[in-house]
Amino acid sequence: MQPAITVGLDGSPESLAAARWAADEAEKRKLTLRLLHAWPLLAPEAARVPSEVDQNYWAKRLVHTAQTELQARHPGLSVIGSLVADDAQNALLQVASESEMIVLGSRGLEPVQSYVLGDISMPVVARAERPVVLVRAESRETGAPPAPAKGVVVALNLHGSSDGLLDFAFRTAAARGVPLLAVHGRSVPLHARVPWGVDHNVTEEITRDVHKQLSEALRPWREKYPQVDVADSIRLGSPAKGVVQAAEGAALLVVGRRAHRHGMAPHLGPVAHAAIHHGRCPVAVAPHD
Image (tube, helix red, strand yellow):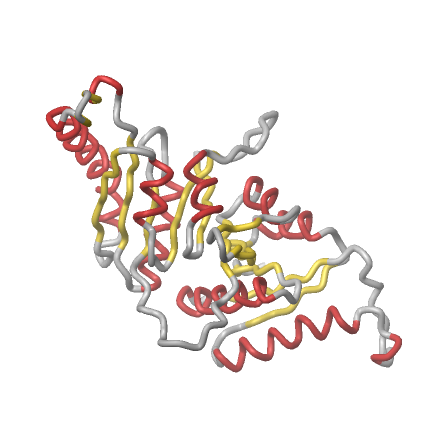
């Protein structure tokens, strides 16, 4: 099957926001958009069944309504609906290998501006072979139009290969025609701490060293994507907090996770956890070696 962007659709405002975000992204990347609705109790398809006795009527209507809206918004976009008689988690993980990305809705808790991941989202984020994007429900406020989104922000830890992470971040920035900000958070070492704060000579040395490492890591990707305007930012302190702060107002925050290896449990690091739970923009979690 031709690569597509796949959305997990359940009819909630969050999944509809995810579908709208994914439609915009599919149009920019010139990809097909797949609306996937999975439910173990879907009945086998029967020919010419009246709607009043069709057990799948509401599932079909859910997908059809979303498909109609998205095709009206994006007339040239190929949108396909897919009903699967399976657990949603299993269905999403199965289609991940043939998808450019999986897009899911996440519920925002207004008092703390946090994500709530349910039984489906977290296992998909931790196990999917391709990047998973989490999108909040759209704001229902009717005030002034939102400020234009900034570019793409990618969090780099500079340990090991980040090729999968950087490839996804650069391709997304290129497709959107927006700048890319590479952020690295580094804890201040104990020897830099002094009674009145931190030793600025030490922190300046750390910053220079990290800047060189960032430049080296980004160099091949700058050459591959010369159209992308790239900047870097070094945040000393809590890496997780620094990344979330740097992504304020971004179009997308991209964080990495180590690819799942046989015999090892899926694992999300503290930066990915902080981005998922506290980032206010859409968050992509991309597997890498």
